Image 1 (cartoon, rainbow, N blue to C red):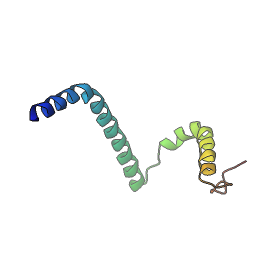
Image 2: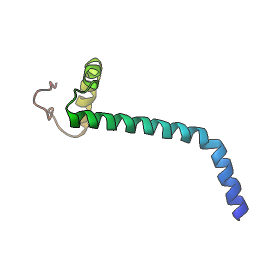
Image 3: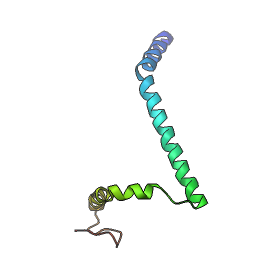
Length: 84
């Protein structure tokens, strides 16, 4: 019984170690970015992501519209955002 579990764990490690390593790396990078943005907010530095958000704003607006419609809101919950 113990031998079968050890073999299963060994095979799992071989099969998924690369993917798990990549997922851990991506999670660490996201955590580092989040901590950097939090630190910048605390010390009062401007957020550089704001400039990049302007490029994707039209796509986000479409997704926001679909989201608030899915949530059962006929109009946008934010008064300054346009809606159909």
